[in-house]
Image (cartoon, rainbow, N blue to C red; front, side):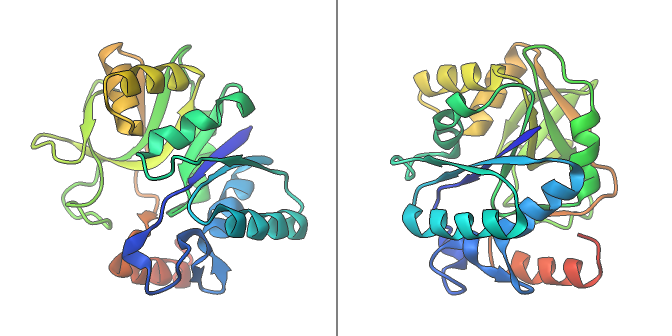
Length: 238
């Protein structure tokens, strides 16, 4: 199975660590390499990475990682990286069949989550999102993560500012090609985001969820999350 990693943005909230977010060192390893390593443990053997901001620098670093850990990495360039993350996913359409894993360069996920998601039954023309139902005492900032409202294992709505929700988006998806069709429709309606595509799929009843249960994951989006990630790594929870 292939894994698509979105790594095109600037990551301004961690700028004091490094100008190029995917290459920020976390316990001696670049953030994006942490993502690749965990995906490999889960059984993924090929990667597609979408770069944008300072793309030449990132692609050179990825080539070094590819050679060192002996894993194929295909580059996709996004010259519209200032737009929302769904644009990056759509740029990679020609390189992906089905199913494939979609994740972000700054989300560290327990390999058991990825393994379980890869083995989950994906409906035809559907997309499955790994979600965290712990909304009472979450590890991640509840005001920063994307919220999801579900019913009977299906997504009914997804977005940042929803007042009613029952779980959080972990940023990891198991996708059929329906993801690309949904992205195109969402963009035609003025929403370039992955969440916009998921709302399209939700309206079609084609968006399902995978419960991560008590497995660890963290969106390393700011200094507070960076320090939490360090502690998780030290405790071998990631």
